[in-house]
Length: 229
Image 1 (tube, rainbow, N blue to C red):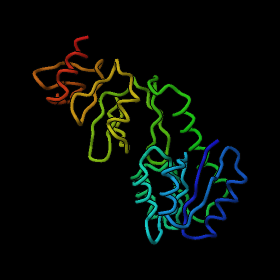
Image 2 (image 1 turned 45 degrees about the vertical axis):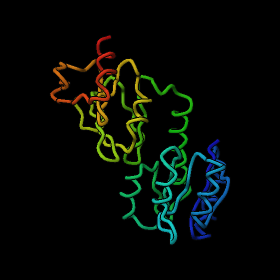
Image 3 (image 1 turned 90 degrees about the horizontal axis):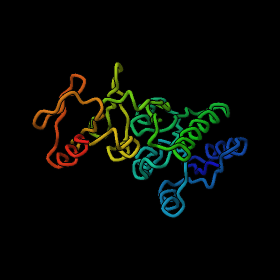
Image 4 (image 1 turned 180 degrees about the vertical axis):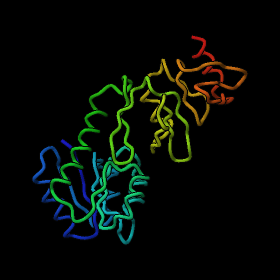
């Protein structure tokens, strides 16, 4: 059962979400809020799995609220303005609903959230594939395809064999915890590499699939111990 709350400064919009949740199996709407600050206070003691978040609110936008909560909670943004879709993508929302939306479209968003939560809760994260949220989709990435991961400001670039890099909003810490520790090692604050894909190591530079990746001073000892095995 997905635990959720809804936040919107307009009462009619909240009534729609309450109504749709009542008609959707597998989701429990714990509470609704018209004031974002009250929602933040509630979440401190009662965390949930999913947020239905209006983007444009007078005191605190849904985007800023979600940034305060962090990536552990999923978000479905609801708004009447399509121009906010890109901003929703930038904070890695699970979906984006343009008002007025149908119950079918609402249930599709809930289904996406359920799929992701099921994967995260019931599947061994250090498995043969990762399920990554990107561009309002859940993308399955075979671990064997990953060459290296590169940090880029608030994002990561997942470099894959014979494919374009995938840009995702994640932290280095979160993705290293998902990858098999025997096959991947962090070599620098901005790089995680597949040990099996390394071509050569010369001084403090790794050659891998035509790329040169640095070995940071703080990671050198752990890398050489790992690579030596």
